[in-house]
Length: 56
Image (cartoon, rainbow, N blue to C red; front, side, top):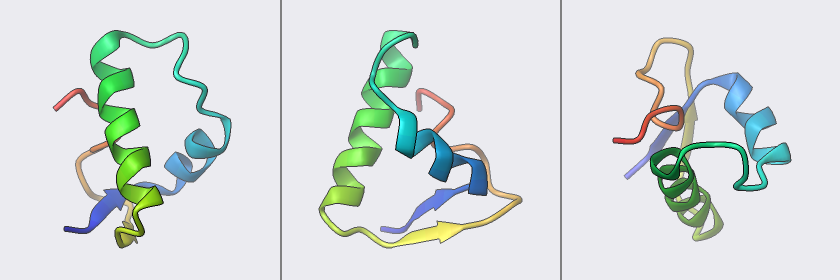
């Protein structure tokens, strides 16, 4: 499956430390980071629902 992100999420990835967010956000972001480390494809777009900014 391809991970859909917005351009600003690339900046979020560079500074993410897993602190200062609610538990649902941290869990979702950690899952996405793990998928990226496994080499999953990334599609950068401007119109997609914000997968990384939500808990679902």
